[in-house]
Image 1: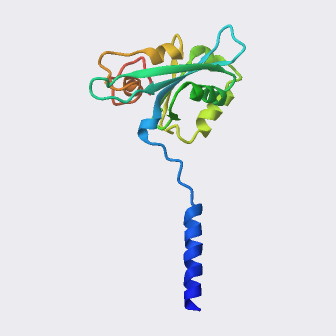
Image 2: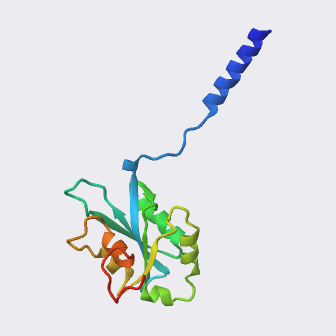
Image 3: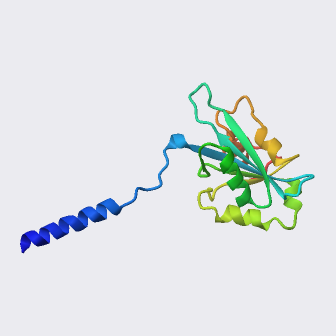
Length: 172
């Protein structure tokens, strides 16, 4: 009788182990890290927003400041991110997104609550992310690449935070 109980236990355990699924973990080399997000109002388009994601390209010391900016016109942030996902070959990771830049025209819109809601509900965007208004556009702010910058968007992080230089033009 004891051997029958043992075999049942072994069969149930093996069946349970075989039914376990692996986790959805993606290796770091299969991810693109978003470091900054830019949102502009589109001009001459049926779509509402021009969403720009600035991706850091991992590299050695020789390519420390490489980045790409991928943009998409859409009526919502979710739609834009889905479309950008189809344009890149890796999984998009927002865990390093520390700056969100809105253009002046975007901030003046009265029907842009969906963008703010999307950013607040997104769990992988840091809750400590800086929000800034870019002039002339958010895209132009994201394109800036100072020679002293060693990491993509690091100049934005330092200038918006209290770690970098203090200037009367930036209020943290």
